[in-house]
Length: 216
Length: 274
Image 1 (cartoon, rainbow over the protein chains, first blue to last red):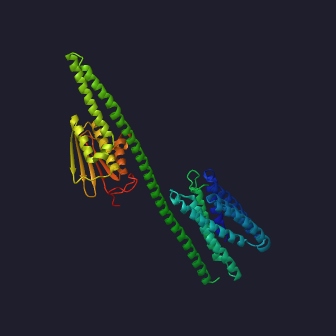
Image 2: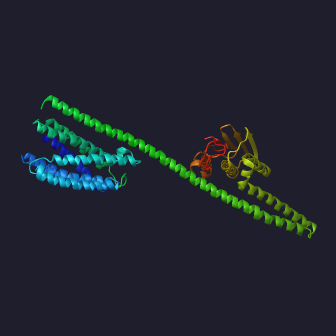
Image 3: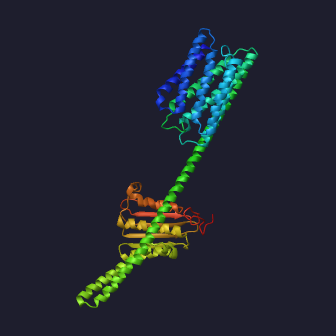
């Protein structure tokens, strides 16, 4: 398990480097994404440190789930042109924040339990935003080749991550209920997050505010 | 955890990945199609815009020609006629030597009046409207041959039919541009004009034996008149080909479908079948 997590941290470090080096050239949503990666990287490193010392790090997962949702949602916020969708994103942040507090205090204690409920709800929203963003791209296609569009790679990364993570989190609960081990699920998780990290890194690598295809 | 459970996870994960990847591939294909469709629509919009600009340019040019033509006919030639008459009256009071000089001047003025009237006619589109393309070209050819600057041959094949006022006017202006270029720049001595009236194809061919020009000329600034011929032909739904080489004269060919409904017409062509 340690090796898989270390690879993830290394991928995050690489993505972070790309984001920081190209920060000035990035559009607003991708600057936000870089800040998000900074938070994720720091929290993951601290989490690994806690895990290495056999300490409970679930409170870090709670914080990470909320900060990630906050940053990813605002990234989507700047990528969308439709005002109603933007408003919906702001409302969703409020909903997730309220649910986060209720969940952390009453359902999945932030001191002991991994916040799967918050992640499940977040991923549902991510999938909705991702599909809506694909729809927006189709409605107003840019002349630029799709493989050179950072918005496409970001959105693809989010969709792959959210759909697979949604299944992953669902199976974790199912396996726990039946007292089964979770070895193969971690490989599945690793595949999802590695793909996500690489795609996000690529989107940061090609994003350029001088040639952006959206209003960010 | 048993093998069956692992197989189940692998199967579900593989299916999920396949669905997501399939969706993304489908999206990319769809996006590419939209891009191509948008590009095509944009090109069509630009073509319509270019045609609109060209149509406006031609309208303005025709209005200017008409105005200048009327000024020549109603003002300048009238004044010159009056001068000619006055000189005739004045000539009666002069001695023979001066009278002869005066008559010479009167003849020159008469020639100028005739030339100006011809110029006025060739500038006005009223002749195209009243005489049609073939007769108007015939008159132009007569004028050219009379000038003895060039020898012009005019041929017609097939039964002439009307192409519509707008098209005939544009074709006539193309012809004028070609003749003007050949006289002014190429120093041509022979012209050959050919009108072919086929059932579903009309062709205007203009050939000269002038200095000719290289292909590069069409692409630079000084070739704008030649390019304009192509644009004008496109405006009436035709296709212009210009073939020339240094020392080999120039051949211009404008072909069009006489029954094609056109944007420039602003509505269906009288003979339109579409």
